[in-house]
Structures are given as C-alpha cells and as structure tokens.
Image 1 (cartoon, rainbow, N blue to C red):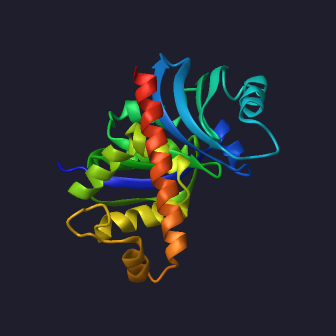
Image 2: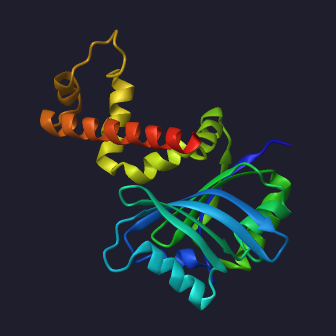
Length: 233
C-alpha cells in the first residue's frame, strides 16, 4: 500500500514552541531521542533575532515554569544562530505519536509558535494518527493528503540535512530567492557564461541588488560549510 504525504501545522496545548509566536525567531530540530516515556532529549538550531529577551533567558524561563525539564547548553555557532540542547516532554507530543505509528520519514520546523510538519504515512494509519494529534493540541493548518512524488521525497530528505537547516535559518528570504533563481538560470554553470547583469535583466531586477544578495548568500553558505567542517574535526 503506497504512502501519502501528510502536511499540517500544529500547536501543542502545553508546548514551549507555542510561546515563540510573538518573538523574532525560527527553529529547526537536529536530533531527538526519547528516554522511555519520561522525557525527550533534543538538539535544535535556532535563529534568534529578538531584542526583548535572549535565547538563554527564554529557555531558562521554560525550565522554571516546567515546559522543558533542563536546558543543557545554548551555544552560538553563527551570528544570531544557536545550537540548543535540552530535555523536554515526550508524552503527548507529535514525536511520541510518530514512534507509535512507526512514521520515520518526515520534516519539521517551528516558526511563529507553530510546528510545521511533512510526514509520509500509509493510508491505514492516517485517520488514527490525525485523531491522536487532535487529543493533544490544535491544527492551525488542517491536515492535507497528497500523492508522494520523487520530488517530495527528495525535499523531505534534503530538509533533514544540516546544511539545509542552517541555510533556512541563516539566509534571508531575498537571498534564498536570488540563489534559487541563479541555480535555475544557470548562473553557476560555467558553460552558460551568465553574468549578474544578464541575470538581473532576466529577472527584471536591479543589478546591484541581485549582486549584493548573491554575494551575501554565497558568503553565508561558505561560512556554514566551514563551521560544520570545524565541528567535525
């Protein structure tokens, strides 16, 4: 029986991520591991640009009010980007239900206090899985089902890679837009010999804006790659 792609946005009733809805931040889960049903050990990447409170203060506050068990570390790895490790609740969470229904292929992120999910799921599990989530929180974007294409599979697998997560946090929307356009137009293909002037003309955009955004995006990505290589060594 073929799997389908289940897409939804979700907010837990008592989950710390919902408290980020008014803060200038976004988050990507790197890794997690449950300790039985007691708690979940998790490592996340967080882009934190909020001036009202520091990311360390935010997580210390969640520890105090009991929404996470313990903040283990909060380390800057890039300007405004942090690697945070902590233990938090596992019972009555999306991840508990992912394990319960043996759903192993998915991607997730947090923005404006909402968890966004893409999950590959078999038809026989769809109704029960969705019902189980309704018992622990609210869908802010109702679940939708669609056939899974090879492109969908590639996107989910790529979304779970470290460089992809860093890119989504580090790059601005405009930098991503021009970087993607450069790839599609063949700017990085030496045989095409496409200049920034040519690219700006094709996009009907200002040359200096395109040039500045591309250089900034490439510089940030190179910094991410170098930082990840340093961590590996």
